[in-house]
Length: 316
Image (cartoon, rainbow, N blue to C red):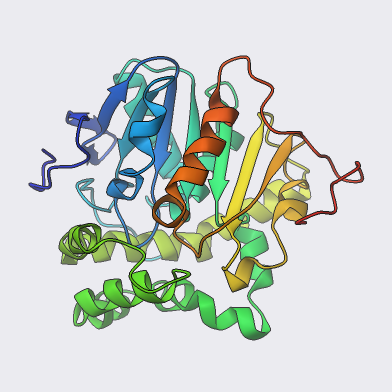
């Protein structure tokens, strides 16, 4: 049972861990080397309920709500999202994992959680041993890609980053409608996310959570975008293997993000999955199969393609 009263994912043991100003409620299950699963907007860690159990035979799986989302309560963000940058959130989650006894681990992130995950790999290379990112490119690249038709798909980036309390009041007035609209319209087929999961996300989309989510988006514009640009200018690289997946039916990712990720890491692999934006719930079997191979100890995993190598043009 999480602090908010949500039962969480069946089979996971939940505990309270404090890191900095934030109280987290991570869930743990399985055995073997640890992997941390991070969710995206507008969901909670429950988005992994069809994937996480399938990883527990070979990994100790940790699920956790991002700072400000779900059961992870914290101090309010600053005017520009201070305290909610990907760097801040990554550092806190490294502390959470250490408190659970895990000094080195793999990270899998979807959407906003993937942004925290790749920042963790950049800032804590000795901690992150493998990285999987779903449905994203790095934040600075994302802002640069928001043009023409794709711009309409990214309306939360600009709405939620408006100065407080505009976004909080506007979204809070229709909170349930916003969540249900996103979950229905960003999937490849309406109704792809179960009614039970949808109800959980609606309940978690409280006034406190909306404030934390707005801080997340403000930090993306004012802090993370700039930080990424500085890292890209100095050719910062992710040193661990990187797995990238996106939805084959996700129009804004139709050109494939592998080419972008190869500018940030040497060892990049992946491809599209039959899904819209919410891969963990739209293509859970295919994702679980891919993650098992990628996370398997001492396993070669899928072929690694680098820029200019044979096969690197496909899906790129």
